[in-house]
Amino acid sequence: MDFNKLNSDLYTLSAPHQFAKKPNEFDRGYLKISNCFNDLCYHYEQKCKANELSDENEFQSLIEEYKNGLLKAINEI
Image (tube, rainbow, N blue to C red):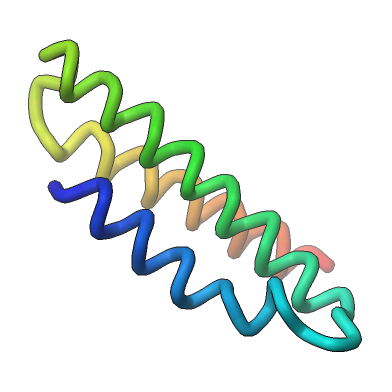
């Protein structure tokens, strides 16, 4: 997985929310999630460089777990 490309894509997608003239709660929430994914990408990129990541399935499963947790929290609100 190309973590640099994923980071770049996350930044591009979050730019309208980051530079909104009047940020609202959605913008702030979007940025929090985007920053969290950025941190995950950085962490796993470092693991890849150190040859500690066995395969991409570990990263993919963590993303799915995180996504499911977010959806559960949204549904409970």
